[in-house]
Image 1 (cartoon, rainbow, N blue to C red):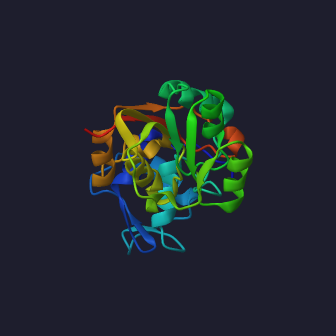
Image 2 (cartoon, rainbow, N blue to C red):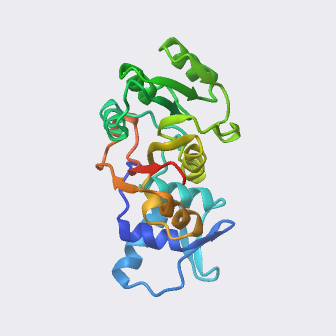
Length: 246
């Protein structure tokens, strides 16, 4: 099935519903016919079918991950690897420019993958550290000139507030991006700045996790549709900036 973008209004409805096992329940508020049909179309495409006796859309398996994947990616189908989307070069350039990375800066890229952001920071003559759990990708970082590569799960790394800049494209699966960015902010020294690529879901979801996260952000700006097309996904993304915590 070809990936298709989900309208923002439909995403808002989906995010307001809830999953219980293999059944998805629409939010309690009444939907007009046009909106219900749009939401139902997405749920059907994801594998859910309306069941009158269950009073919800029933899936063949637990639906929480399926719905979260659709909401976070903003597409009818979940990307094959919600854990890692390589950062396209033009997006990486945008992130480094927004972060205003300079030669005197100490820069951290958490969950660095193959270093699209880290290598640009090196070109700007910054001092760069990376965290990357995957052994193969960590070796790519070392061969590319990153001298300090911590081969660990980033969320287990003890924060040290020594970095002028944090630039990152964290994993998105199960809303990991919020947890990774919240943790990464703790690595900024006073006056530091964080710039992160995140799932578009952080901009509109109304649960406690998302609303409390938005309160920490300086800016949240959408990236263009298809920004990650060359990485093999239509995932919808935003760029988030944060200052160091007071």
